[in-house]
Length: 155
Image (cartoon, rainbow, N blue to C red; front, side, top):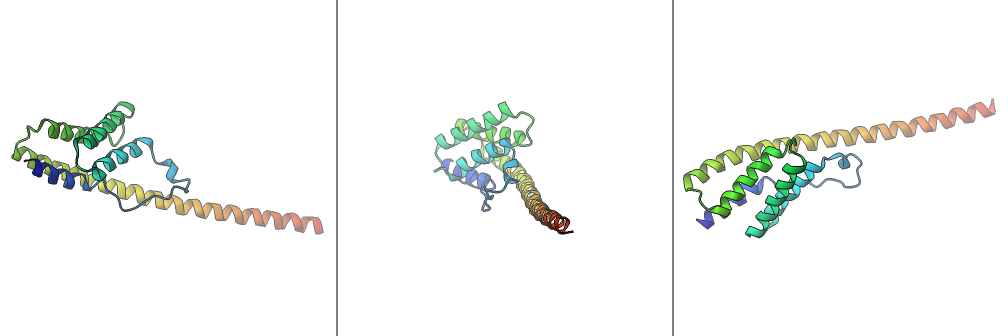
């Protein structure tokens, strides 16, 4: 039964793993909300953990903090779901059918989270491009202003 839970959680939390890293230098990245950061950190604890209950308890604590500090967050429903699953694992009272049912629900929730993360990443990329374009336009305007000032002095 424990092996089933291990497989269940590996598949369940696989969606939290991300192969993309955000550029920490970009000013746009700093606009990622603290609740999203907290949610991602909790997911990373579970995914990178050695499948020990301590890791799940740490993640559960982080999800609880997310719910306490950001109750209206878009990640709050997912945090509640993770807490329920972790509590279920702790009590080990889930039957196989219940677990399979929850896996189905969790997979659809994870797919929703994955799509949302993809949209957010696309939006960040779009904003970074726009930010670069605006910086370039500003630099061009500064050069034009300097050129106009030089012309004004010589006339």
